[in-house]
Amino acid sequence: MVPVSRLAAFAALLLVMTSAPARADGFLTPFIGYNFGGDSSNCAGLTDCSPRRTSYGVSVGAMGTSVGFEEDLSYTKDFFGAAPGAENSVFSAMSNLLFLGAPGRIQSYIVSGVGLVRLRVSLNQTSVDSSVIGYDVGGGVNGFLTKHVGIRVDVRHFRTFQDVNSLLVSGKLGFWRASLGLALKF
Image (cartoon, rainbow, N blue to C red; front, side, top):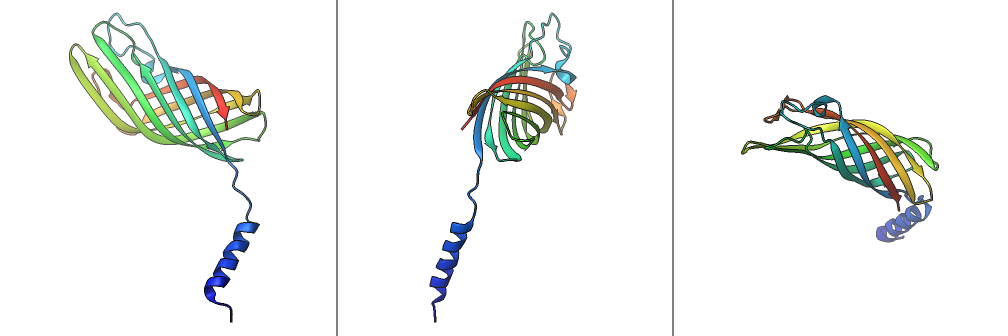
């Protein structure tokens, strides 16, 4: 009689030899974006304010043939606008699922996830920080110029689940972000 341990080892070897290898492409996308709409569309009561809503960030993750995962980090200084005596910013860290269109040099996707939204406001020596859970939903297109380098165009809506405690906004924070990035696939 064959010992059970040898039989289990043989079964495991057969399973490893017959299974298809998993395939996923990693990616890194540094981007520059512009926040618009919602709470970023006005200066939220700041006087002598000039709008500045440029965001910077990076997305990193992995894509299979139809589904992927990404971590999206972005930062916007002067989210509510720049004004004398006022400093403000919004940072977001979102964990997202990507649902991919047909594979090829040009690939569309939709994205949705949850994460942290951190709002910091300092106005006339009074400072308030608020960290809340939020979500994002959107979509975009990756266009690859070579096998590993391309351009990413993306539009997302961000919203907090909870009210934010801030000197410049009350209630839930919501805004849109359009971005353009360098898509690096490895």
